[in-house]
Image 1 (cartoon, rainbow, N blue to C red):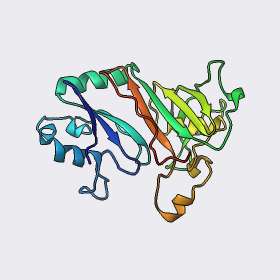
Image 2 (image 1 turned 120 degrees about the horizontal axis):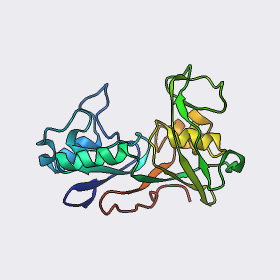
Image 3 (image 1 turned 120 degrees about the vertical axis):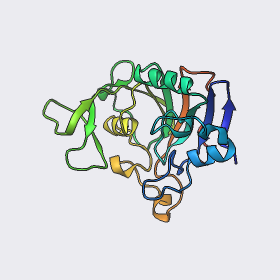
Length: 226
């Protein structure tokens, strides 16, 4: 099944399912991934001398459990413009997620934003940590992060970001009382599917990327819980 949702002169909009990595796994270079499927469908995407880490013109990544839009450039010039837009924080990224919690508005600004910096956890290489106060311990430096939350009703929430720190939505959401459903790394409620080895590790869907081309808006997958 094709991952290509829309084709434009400069861009390809790809719809990545949960569980599929964008690039091959380090431990298995031949593993299934967005890049492998893209090149099988459009071999010409492999003909450009793409920079390392942007093979196939893929301009950014999503975590393996995250479903949603991935942007691929169709030329070196288009990729340069995409990278410049990401660096300048000129792109607005909208995500949808499920949580069993409730937003703690004491942790948010008046317009629903969490702007606490994020860094690598001082002990765990798997986790990030929010700077709760001046003495919060971390590994490395603190990264600016800005996440705007909105409750959509029931267990559904929306997160809008212009920054892209590792695990940003997950760690900000947990800090604000709405850890992602299934994201046990950050205190989210465990899913029965996790123990069975199937389904997403957590429910997070990249719905929109505004600022380049005519980006489609994708609703959360139909297999999400009602």
